[in-house]
Each structure stands twice: as C-alpha cells, then as structure tokens.
Image (cartoon, rainbow, N blue to C red):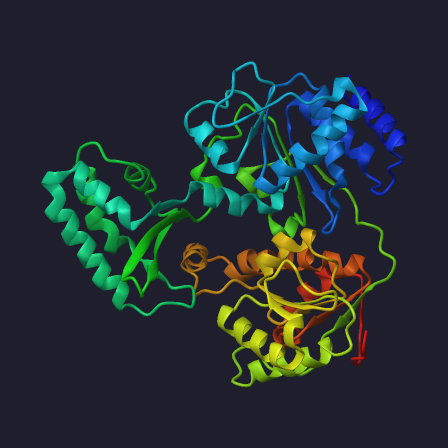
Length: 482
C-alpha cells in the first residue's frame, strides 16, 4: 500500500538526515499518500510560520505513487524544488528520484507535470489535463495567483495590432480608443493611478469586436472574459498620456468551472482556517481536512498596542506614526520592519525616519543593515521575508485591510453587497488576518515584539478578531528598549 511505503521511506530518510525540526512529517506523508491512492479532495492546513522543511513529506509520496499528477507551483517554489528538494530526494534513494516535466505541454505518459498557475489555466482550457490529479502547495496564494493567471491586459501596442488586422474598422477603433482615453485621463485617480471602467463604458468596444473577423491576441481573450463575474480598470500613465486596460475575474473559481471534476486534488497552505474560506479554493469541498498543528512556541508574542490611538483618517495620524516609530526604533539592535500599504504615507514615513536614523532606514530593501529599518508594504514583506534576517520587531503602522479605492476590491465588495452579504467580515477582514499571521511568523520565531499603531485595533469591534489570530500574546503595557 502506498501509505506504508511512503511512511517507511520517509522515516528512513529522516533518520539518515537526523531531521527532527518539524513534528508532522510522517502524518503529512501518510495523508498525501492516502489522498493520491483514493483520488479524493484533501486540504492540509499548516500553521502560519511553518518552516519549509515540510516539502520532503509531500514529495516522497509523489515519487512513489504511480498516478499521473499535475504539480502546480509558483516560480519561487519551482526553484526550491529544482535546487533543493529534488537533489535531496535523489541523494537519499534512487527510488525517490522524481521524474518531472515542465512547460505548457507534456507527454500523456509523463507521470509528474510541473505547471505554473498560468500554465494550469491554459492546460485546462485546452483539455490537456485529462484525469491528472492536482497537487497545489502554497494554497494561501492560490486565489491571487489564479486571478493573475486569468487576467487579460490590453497594452497600447495591442490597439495598433487590432487596427492593422482589421483595416476596414480602423476609424471605429480609433474613435473608441480616443473616447476612452478622454474619459480615463480626465477622471481622478487613486494613488496607484487606477481608474475603474464600468461595463457600459466598454460595451461599444465589445459590440464592435464581436462583429469583426479574426482578431489578434489578446483581444479574443478579452472578449471571452465577459459577464458580471469580471471587472475592468485602466492603469493610467498621466505623463505619457497612455493607459493599459486590465480585466480580471472577481472569483477565480467561477471562471474555472469543472476543473476538479473527475480528478483528485491536494491543497496545502498556511493560515487556511475555516474563517478564511480555505476550503473554497477552486470551489473545493474537501473529503479530508487536517490541521497539522502550530510550530513550537517558547513564549507568547509581546504585543504593544497602546490605548486611545488615532484612527487612520485622523489629520494627525502621520505625526502619530512617526513619533511612535521613532520610539520603537530607538535602541533596537536587530532589524525593524514597518508595514503599511498606503504608498504615499509609507514614503513620507520613510523620509521622516531617515532624517532621524540616516542610512539605517530603507524602503523595501533586501540588503538592510543588521539594525536597519525596512519600510514596506505587507505583500512585499510576506514575499521577501524568507530571504531576510528575522526581525527583532515588526511594526504594523496600518492593518492590511484592502482599500475600496482599488477597483478590483471595490468590484468584489460590490458583488457581495448586491447579494446582501457582510462584505467586510466575509472578504476584507479574513484576507487581512491571513496577512497578519504570515507577516508576524518570523518575529514570533525570533522572540521579537509586534507593535500595532492602528487605532482601529482597539476602536472597532472587529479588533478582537485580530487579537485572536495573534494568540498566544502578552501585552506590553509600556515601551522599553528591546
């Protein structure tokens, strides 16, 4: 039986290596092997901050199984697989050498086909997946990765290609482009220079393209991305008086109906608790859901969250951040990381701290001083923290609640509002809690402290959800050098 073989091989490999850092290796190996044999839908929820040595427990059953698989990886995970995990397997035992194929196509008899998220979408649309089982690590990134894979972007040069492909419609295409340009360049823009496009504004272009002959890519893909489940916006460059047309699905699983039919699927991810909707990835209704426990915690996380802090919309909020960050950084001997997604406020705070602490302060730098200060967005830190030293303190200047100024967020919220649902607690808050857990994992492991300077933490009822997601923690009643 596959479970017994995977258990035996994995146990022997771990004993040879003397690896005892993660307590769930054998459990994960048996669960993955069972799911492969039964071809069912399995969700394995890892604790936020779990170190990446769990990979070996996933790959040993994949190497021993006879089933045809599609392994869906981000670029960073593919590099780890190629440079670290595959050589480790091959060195342990010849029977564990994993035969894998990369690229947009693979021979039907290929047992393990490694795909990016975009290649997964293309393979499914072309009918190339057959009955391959899906294995998807890093499932906490799956929603965003699939949305990016399904996205359609119309760049300025694509309009010229369209005019050359359809010379008889050149006048109509130019008129529609000029009309959209005037409309988009005249509208106020958010800090990311994005302008939402309503369906009625792009309807004339869609009607024109539907009656034309063969269209160059990506225009057919843009036409196919139709319906209420999609939204459009323009990324405007006011200096060049140009813009790009972006179109993305609100919920990727609705754009991929039937992708899990007649096939097994294994999802692994961090922070995929029930309140985060982890079981709904790809429309998954798992047969098996297993939590693989928390990493060992020596002490609760020290949390500095003063009472009566101003709210982010206060006119004095920037001064409050700068004053508190000065106090937090003063005397720090380890790396400090300050997180906020508001780009204008982040750059302002970076300048203020640099005036006080000089070259120690950097903006989203991957080469900080040992006692440096990195000011970054939440997404940047989550993506890059594995390649940076563990911080001595993490400062949440603003909680990572998505802004309704973002056209995609506004469209997703609007869809939930139309259904009469609680869009904040169903969408914005769960997404923020996942980011908080993932971002704070390193400072927790390092025995550092977390400071939250957002007054909404104590001023809003949902702040209790943030406190619960950080447990265990201990309050710092006053600020001392750390």
